[in-house]
Image 1 (cartoon, helix red, strand yellow):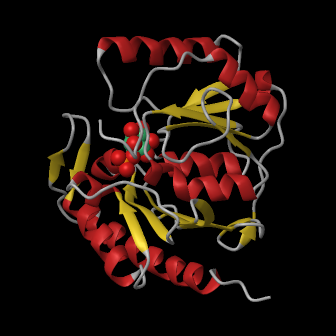
Image 2 (cartoon, protein in one colour):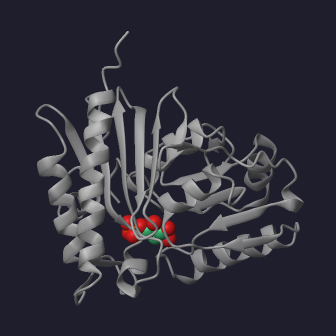
Length: 276
Ligand code: LIP
């Protein structure tokens, strides 16, 4: 039986390569920085140009899209049953601004709210991660899989500090880092791009990643990749993963994911498909 979405995925890989090239070229020039929700929530002209490139050369008629910069400009962020591209043109904008080398283009493609394929291009490293539902995960065409680590005391854990710096969130976030370090784990890292973090766990470079306050465009591409690499993805509370919930845990094993869910304190972070 032919795969109805394979051609779309191949096309998406090509568009993502062009987007990555545009980002690498922009790194050679001056970067003009603008603020979004706060002085540490940044956006650049390149984020906007790359999103336009993907929307105009990538998505086909009758396909919908949810793009980080389109939503910032007022477009709705509602996941429907229609074929939908969920786009983060630059995941790791702060890294891009500082030329810190974890900068990715992330695209997840959903049909009937299920993720059919995911593409994450870590464009400075030139690593193209791809996953098609049921067909495995790859980095530059080579199959990848999670470490399989079951023992959290032997794990390397990723998380991010996010944009919320109000005292209440800050205290919970730092408290969670404290709690995880005290388990103990081998270490905690913050590479600065949610999509790259998910790929690092998918290829065994780290064993878990948890985050509250990210968005569907940060998670959609990586969600396909971690699942197809044999990893576990769940809600921060330990329940089923919800793409619009703005929170997740991924891990090399259920044991590690469930332990993280048990240890951390959750703070409210809203949803992508509701106001506020
Ligand atoms: C960023 C994430 C990063 C996280 C930031 C932000 P952006 O995405 O990838 O891991 O710490 O809060 O969500 O804004 O660069 O696309």
